[in-house]
Amino acid sequence: MEIRVNKIISKGMAPVFLLKDEDRIDRHRLFKFLNAEDKTYLINFQKNFPVKKEHSHPLVLPSGIKVLVLGIGERVKFNNRKAMLTGRRLVSVARAEKVRNLAVNFDDFLARDNRENQKLLAQVLATQFEMANYEFVKYKTPQPEGWFFVQAIEILTEKQNGIKEGVEIGQIIGEEINKARTLSNTPGSDMTPRVLASEAIQAGEKYGIKVNVLDEKEIQELKMGGILGVSKGSSEKPKFIIMEYLRGGRGEKPVVLVGKGVTFDTGGLNLKTENGIYEMHMDMSGGSAVIHTLVALGRLRVKKNIVGLIPAVENMPSGSSYHPGDVLTTMNGKTIEVLNTDAEGRIILADALEYAKKYKPRLVIDVATLTGAAMSALGQRASAIFSTSDKIRDRLVEVGESVGDFVWPLPLWEEYEEDVKGTFGDVANSGKTRYGGAINGAIFLWQFIKSSSSVTSGPTPLASAWVHIDMAPRMTATENEFLAKGSTGAPVGLLTEFLRKF
Ligand code: BES
Ligand code: MN
Ligand code: ZN
Image 1: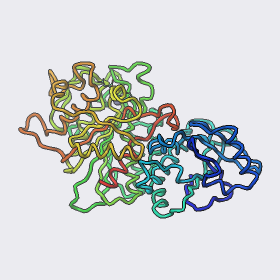
Image 2 (image 1 turned 90 degrees about the vertical axis):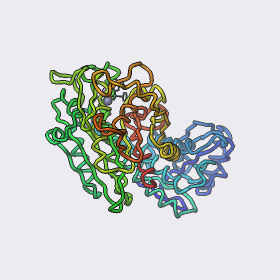
Image 3 (image 1 turned 180 degrees about the vertical axis):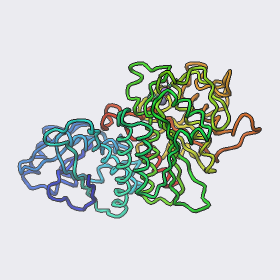
Image 4 (image 1 turned 90 degrees about the horizontal axis):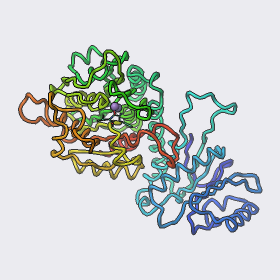
């Protein structure tokens, strides 16, 4: 899609009138671009049909041009969150009404909590436009006239500088979010660990990202018993994907991103139910987010050292599966008592977090569709975030709020460690009660951050800080958020914006 910034409306662009309850259409910035007859028509239209919140009116004016008139509710209630939703909504209305080219007034999106930083607003809008214009159609027979997508959006404003730059940045981020969505949406049979690895290689090569993929033999040599254990039941071999984007200073310690890459999660011998197994081809969404966050940073020429690690496996039941009761020895030496083969994400992440130590990172962020419990806690609007650093956690919450990729904190307290102590191994992969599942997952991972192994004395801190994002709540889009069914691409937007500025 083309997104451009302009002062006057170009020919062929359908004007979009976003009206708050008290707004008069004849005072709208785009009104002056219409001819007299069209103006009268619109004034009469608003007299007869007051444009209320959530009303969408696609209209054909007497001169034959199309316009969209959308109600966006009370002025006092309009905020940045609504502005972002409105950005997606107008694209989805345009697609439904088959309007290919749109012109919007930048100032329509201004709210009390976003007018301070209008460059960021421009960026965020461009991202939202791209996201709303995405649909996963690769496996569907095209309609005879082809799939309908918006072709161009013109953002009208007098203040050109900063806004243009913001749009360019936002568009790149939106495109990479959509590519992450495509990887996640790809069915499990076509998105195996091997395919995910080759996608990482392809995505990385253009932007100076070095990609190295370890195969089963190399994973064995590194003694990554967690990854090997989980992958045993599948005929698809595990891969360990390493992406290095080193554009920072030589001495600069990197940030390491770790993404869960379970290409299909059946639950293993603790097989999931019919409802539970649905959409489990998206259990590599942490991995796809890491891949395309790195690509976004590369395209934005961010001068930092960032590493991406993705343990990729398929979790299957079979005659060679790992069993409940098995005790796995991880790369770090700590053993994991497998109480439930469906809590596989934390097992493979344990090895990846240990591998991250090689880089002496200043920060490690892992992203994983880890627990259904995170969804029980937060619903589907925000991912759960845990961190050893309150400051970094709060910063991520704030950045998420500003770009529409939300995270919300849950506690990381030592008191919870009781719940993940093993009986026959050091750490148990599932909690003792049915409560606090998302916290148990985080506390489990923390054990692999804290110390090198149970055998060596004293904790060896892995990084100055660690963040865990349980993105299960944001794996798939919900109703009324004007995103196509399937993957949301979270948290590519959050991580890219955070790392650009970190
Ligand atoms: N991939 C799932 C978590 C999940 C569920 C993500 C729904 C997205 C939507 C994960 O591997 C899992 O199965 N977790 C278990 C953990 C339990 C066995 C301790 C869960 O949440 O039930
Ligand atoms: Mn599972
Ligand atoms: Zn899983």
